[in-house]
Length: 527
Image (cartoon, rainbow, N blue to C red):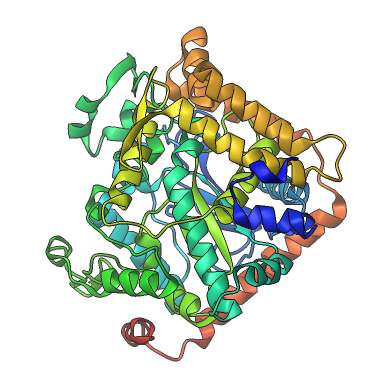
């Protein structure tokens, strides 16, 4: 590796001081959502399976928006194979306890029959459980339930602890170490926002949508071409989940969240949580004694802000996420723009994880100017362009105010990632990081190899609608997990976690000292 050709001062410093091995110690965790569906592909109407434990208190198996939208969470591991092995164990345990149901392999839901077919998740009678349910009722009134039934994968990454001291020495910063860490994480986040469109191009797997998705919002159907009688699409789309009709929300388009510092982020997000919004005021908060939403502000809570990447801190019981960040800084980043991989039973592959890790390290090690006034809009426009038209020949994006071909910019990013992959591979003769990079370079060279293109090609070849294509994959993965026996010790561990979580929920419900109104008032009064 020729150090003189590397344009990252941080990476050059690590190599010059023979500390590059520290890059290998980052922690990786995965959160994966999947809808429970019937054998025919219809969204489940049943309760969260009791054998899986309490969705409120279980550390690894919970629900997201709906009662049917399972969410699996791994602990963070240094070796991504350990992370994926844990995710595999969760899937096998869950499949042992699903009654004539399976997990939908695609991000975009099919088999739904309008908003009313989507049951809002229930978390019991405790104050915190009721708060989680009310928040979801608010999302229904604001955005509809259908959008909330979309599933994705979140990749959580924590920078190696020992790396911070070296980078701190290199920069000779006047900040405290904790302030430097926060500043560096936000630099990483800004760079990810600039280049994160590449994740949609490479891993987007939602180029089509079932017509049923629009039953509660039929006015949106005219934006799309018809693939077949049951499916709409954009011919060059990569991730409609990340477009305006999917995971992103036009209601939040004018939010100006500050990513230039931790304090700026906390203050701007807190302002949105405390600023009334006339459209939501017409919904009402408590109507005829029943909560319709937590409040009528721009955001009810932090989680309502739909972003591709979030700074995160582990929260303590009842603590607001912004306060956790303010008190203890950034612990890790959560990447939220990955679709479920329809070609992998876990919804994410080892190659994807290795590429995303190297990509994030390149975002950390590269200089990261503060965001200018219009940069958020430029970043959002680039992401929407790639979500809707990413495979279009000669597609151009906006790089620092200048037009650039998507393929040209993508190769610039890949070139910056290559030396990081070499470092991460140093002790592994199989060179898995470089192989992951090479695989993604092929997708840049040939858009027909992307997951989004492969899905459309498979639908055409099999003469299937998008829903049937997803159910076919789901059925195959059901067999995959059921054919593999989970170790008896692990089964016992998961069973005990389920029992313990149910006991914890019951204890919460018995220990509430405040009424719900007072509890919510106390929660939002934290500062």
